[in-house]
Length: 411
Image: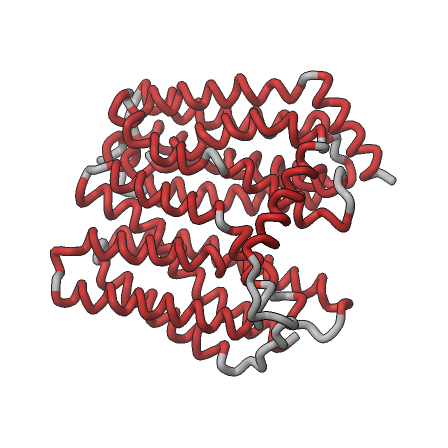
């Protein structure tokens, strides 16, 4: 367990400042350029990278987790160091350097994110420690997410990309050094052989499982519309905060912190009520309410741009985080229970890939849509579209499936 805790601490030090820097990067780029196209480009690259997570997961299964983690952190260090050095000599190239670091991180995360999700089983001494190990990973992720939002606030307040990069660089160095104290896990047999056909076959296998799962097939059109609307709104958040609430500096970071804290509160609420959940009501209600929250953000900022409206926006994002967290936990529990235990990984991977297909399109469209329509009105319209699509889950065909899950869960 000591090896795992050290690896978790290393990952914590790597993720915390990186998450803060990326949040700051979107704000900084729009603040400096007032060009939503650049923000959309970065978001699109990040979303496209997510689609390759299945490749990253495959690669992470082929090598020693610790050795691969050290290699990726070293590569990350090199990219950040290059950006930092360049910025020292060319201070006016801040936007280019920030874009470079964000893009490099997106590419590295294709492998790094699936790797950190899978290293717990490889670093424990016996299977009995797995639950405790996963709890440590989850706890570290939650703490990192909260502190990251706070650190992003500091980055925005200081607004010096060089200082932010130096902090990130120091954290990555410590993260790399910590991994040097861990005895590497053993690489799987034939680790040097990466078969593209095997990756493709696994992906096709996952797609076939989805095709025969009624719940997922019914949710695909809803998920695609909801994800599209959400990511258009999310990528426009820096522009929204800077242009709509320019007199209130705290709005951008307030939204980020509220969304993060809301997600954690939602998970805590679910843990308290999970034994008495009526998912046929809770799941559609949470999906609809999270959409309604975004519609309220739009209409509130459309009517007035006062301190009250800014506060309402932040509170709505807090509520969105709560409802989204509860819905996600229930929905993916349903997906897990509706598939064979032997195929759960393939099923989840396929579902996440399908649901994420629309995301790069949404991030790319945030620029033209943001220029075409007044931002508060656009957010309101997209929020209403999300509400109209979400209420479809109250239809009998969805209700029967959720009630079936309740019966299985109560056994």
